[in-house]
Image 1 (spheres, rainbow, N blue to C red):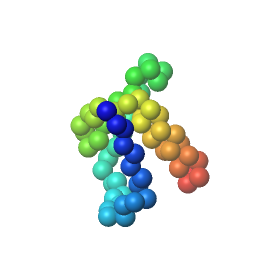
Image 2 (image 1 turned 90 degrees about the horizontal axis):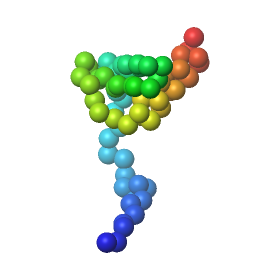
Image 3 (image 1 turned 90 degrees about the vertical axis):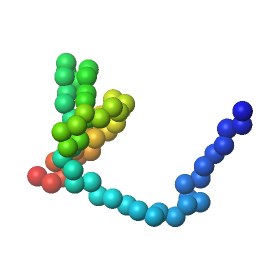
Image 4 (image 1 turned 60 degrees about the horizontal axis):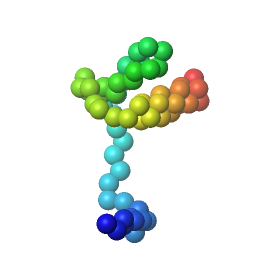
Length: 65
């Protein structure tokens, strides 16, 4: 099977959405378990996504306050 490659720059941006929904991350066991919660609903994501969001939030808080 041939693996294709997609160049994102071949497509124009058709929409950009600023997220304002309530987003929370539950951290358990000293960071061993992380759960993404959006508008009260648990969402299955890789742990790396939660880590990335937490890092971005901490950087925002540092620069904002």
